[in-house]
Image (spheres, rainbow, N blue to C red):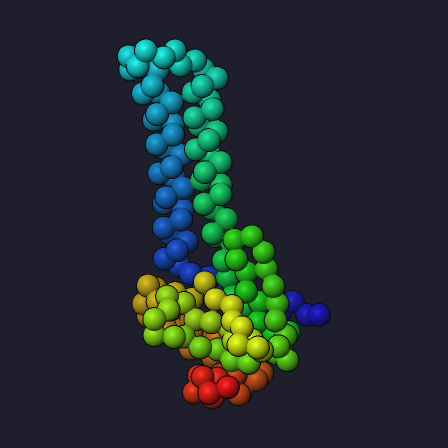
Length: 157
């Protein structure tokens, strides 16, 4: 199996937001580690407690940073959708279509048996970048499975 992809996209706005939030989480936990020592709360906060605050902040930020893994790729092998925890490739024989319902925040990869998988990498909040990504993905799908690229034929299945 080759490792070349014709289309590769990651959500830009999500990436910026996640990184900014991770930094804020760490800074807030570091600040709390210092503030709780200075304040008169009636509780003794030691160095180990301060370190624990920082470590908890790093853990929260690390969990949040798993969202940076989100991506969609398409090529000769099929379509790969990667989420925060796992990645999966669907071959062209398993793909019925590609749709972007009006009420949805992201498009869907339509599968047999009326099942679908959300494509989190392309989001409506990304504006023109999302539109361009959807167009690029549709072009790639059209190249390998033309019937799956037309949302009208997919909706009528």
